[in-house]
Structures are given as C-alpha cells and as structure tokens.
Length: 323
Image (tube, rainbow, N blue to C red; front, side, top):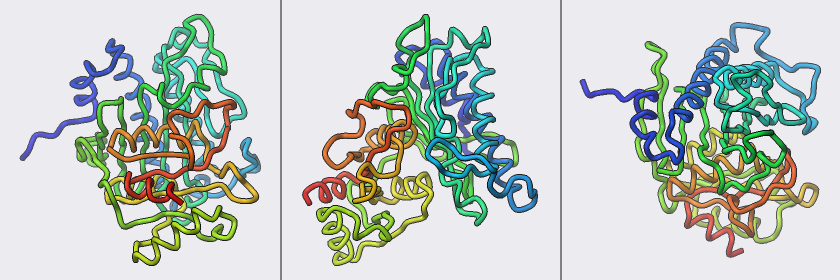
C-alpha cells in the first residue's frame, strides 16, 4: 500500500516555503480543517435532520435569506479560528462587519481571514455540491485591527483555499507555491493528499455561465458565448461557485459571472470569492480577470464589494477578453 500523506504532515513538510514559518500557518489551517469536518458532518445529515435544512428568518447584508446551514457553518468557522489563536479577526459574507476577537489568545494573532462559510447554500435542499472559500492575509498593524486589514489587494494574500462538500469532501489550498488537494477519508476522519501540484489545462472545452442573463450581458460576452456554442464547447453550470470552479480546475474550462445591465458589478464578492479563487487559479497556471483588470491587482474599497469574474484556463480567459 502506498504511503499516505495527511494534510497535517504536508503542512509541516512545506512550512519552510511560507515566509513566516513559525508554525502559525499550520495551526491556522488546522482550525479550518476542523471546522470543515464539522460542517461536512452536518451536510451529510441534511436529508435526515430537519433542523439543518431550510431557511431562517434572517437575511445577510446582501439581502439574501440565510439558510440554517449558512448560520451553522459561519459559527463553526468563526469559533474554530477564535479558539486557535492565530487569527485576530474574521470577515464573513454572513456578517455586516468584520469580527475582531477579544480573547487574550487571539488579540496577538498575526492573520485575518475573509471567508464565504457556505458557498452555494441555495443548493443545500436539493443535494447539490456546496463549499467553503477562505482567504488569509497578514495583519497590517500588530497593535490594532482595522478595516484596512481586509481591504488589501488579492496579491497580498498569504494563503487561500476552498472546501467542496460533494461525492467526496476535498480541501484545496495554496500558499503561493502551487496548489494541492486533500480528500477526506471518512473512515479515519483525516484529509489525505490526493491531488498534488494541481494544474489547470491551458485550454478547455467547458464554459460555465448563467445563460438566463444572456441578454443583459455586454456584447463581447454574448459574442464569446455564441463562439463557444459554434465550437461545440460544453455548457456546465451548477450554480455553486466552488463546484463549478473545482470541475473547471480539474478538467479545463472557464467560469464567468459578468456584470449585467441591472448589476454592472455582477454578483460575486471580491474578498470572499474572487480573490481566493483567483490566487488558486493563477497558482495552478490559469487566469482571472474582472474583464479589464487582473483580479489580484484590484484594490478593495469596501468589505462586501462585488466584481465581475472571468476565471479558468488561460486560453479561454484571453479569448473572452478579446471580445
């Protein structure tokens, strides 16, 4: 039987690549791993336990009605990072403002985390893959936490990753030295290295976009979609960003969420979705842009800022940008 490398072993082995290799990253990712396992357990019970399924009476800052599992996932990830001590503050898609940890063990934490604790939550009730997305930055001021800690451009991320809860549960992350994927072995409750040094194909045959908005897209985007159809490329759109992204990362393709006439900035959040996935995609050899600018070069101006997103195989991203 081949040797199995666990996530914990891998992090320790690769820690020398991290610019501040003092064990901090290991502990931070340990907290994310723990929370992901807890959320995975609840996701797997979703069809059996009524209190996990359905909506709450609350809305998040985007005006979206929160799902019960949204709230659960948000609480699990926040608590896990609070208790670990490496994170001093968290910004979540589910909270209006960032949360600063006052616990003595967390006040001196070196990092802030921006996250979408449960991406694709509208698909929970119909048993479609959902996920978690996270983005890690080094705090700017060792004495105090401010909004500026989160409004750093994506090229300042020290790590980014996602978890996809599907037919198997995978955690994929990068620290700027390639992308590696780990699959949860449910028999032992451990994430094991299953996809080392992930690379997206330079070109692909899959395009992922909500074509229901076709007539609200700009003409260059419509032209590209028409070209994909003429070339007999496959349209694949799940409606869970992590699931669509993960498939295209493995198989090659492009995911698009353009602006529309009604929503010129699109729907996706720069901090919680576009930035971390752009870092992963670039580290895997792909590209990510908002249509005019590299995603990782955008300077955020607000916590819940939205931006258009074109991300995937470089040849496909370049083609759609040509109009």
